Length: 429
Ligand SMILES: Cc1ncc(COP(=O)(O)O)c(C=O)c1O
Image (cartoon, rainbow, N blue to C red; front, side, top):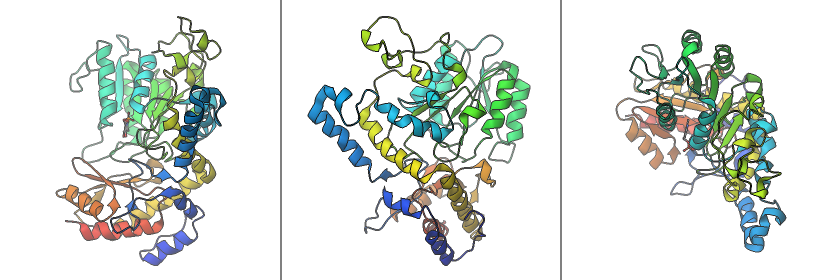
C-alpha cells in the first residue's frame, strides 16, 4: 500500500480503504458523532485517542470483582490486582522495543519524568546542563527547570552560565536538523548532564533521530532520556538497542488508554541493579518478596519496577488492556506502513490546495515524522479550527499559529483524510 502513487479524486480514497487490510479495526473504536449523528472526522489521536469498544467490558470486570470480592480481589478475582500491571508488560515492551524488565506502567508522564530525573540528573560543577528542544512541551520545561533549581543551579535559558541548553532551528526554519542536534551535543557535551528530547515534538510533529542522539550523547558521557508522549504507538521504537538511559510516555494519545490513563516508563537494562542510584522510593518499588513484611528499609526491585511508588490504579489500567490487545492484533509494523501512507496522502492532498494561507511545518521525510501534520495557519487559524470542529472535523490548535491533525492508522481511513482536506481548504479564511 505504501508505494501506491496518490491521486487527487475521492475514488482513490475509496479504493484505498477497500484494499486496506487494517480498515476493519475502525469498527473496534467508538467514533465521536456530530449533532446529526454522523461519524466525526476525528484527527486528534495525537491528543486523546479513541475509546476501544471493549474498554467498558475490561473496566466492568474489575468493578464486578471489586463489588463481589472487596479486598480479596487483590488475589482471587478473574485478574488478581496484585500482579495486574504485569498483564501489560509484554505488550508495552514490544511497543517500545524493550525487554520486559525494562518497562513498567505507572503514575503519569510528568511524575515519571521527575522520578527519572531524581535518579538520572546528577549535576556536578563541570557537567550540569540539561539539553532540551526549544518549545518542548510546557510540562517538560517546568519539570526540567524545577529540577535544575532543586539542585541549586540556574535555569534561566538566556543567562550565559545557565543550566538549560535549548536546541533551536536555524533562522527561517521550523524544525531542528538532525546534524545540528548532534553537532551541538559534540560541542557542548562535556558540560551536559542530561539530553532530554521529545521523540516526536508535540508542536511540529518532528521525529528526532533517537538512535543518533543516543549514540552521540552517550559517547560524550551524557545521560540520555526521551519523552515519548507523541512517539509511543505512533512509530516503531527500539529503546533497548538504541540504549537511552530512560524514557517516559503517556498512554492516552496513540495508545488509546483513556483520559489521564496510567503512563509508561523505560529504564535501560544496564541500570536494572544500579542500587547506588538515588531514587524517590515508595512501597510498590520495594522487593515484592518482602514488601508485606512492612520493614522500614527500602530494597528496590530490579529493573523498571523498582521505580514504582504506589499500588497501581486498576480501574485506569483496565481500558489500557483493551487498547493494547487491539494494538497487538494489528501489529505496529503494519500500522506504521499505513500511517506513512495516510500522512503522505494528507500531505499530497493539501499540496493540491497549496496557498499562502497555510504551510505544513512538519518534516516531509517519513522517517522524520509520525502520523501528525502541523499546519501553520497565520491570522485567523484558531477560528478555522473552531469552525471545522463545529462541523465535526476534529483537530486541535496550538498557539500561536498551528493546527495539528493526525490520521491514526487504527481508526482513520483514506476517506477521512480526503474529506478533511476538502473541508479544510473550503474553510480557509
Ligand atoms: C510531550 C508531552 N509531554 C508531557 C505531557 C504531560 O503529560 P501528563 O499530563 O500526562 O503528565 C504531554 C501532554 O500532552 C505531552 O504531550
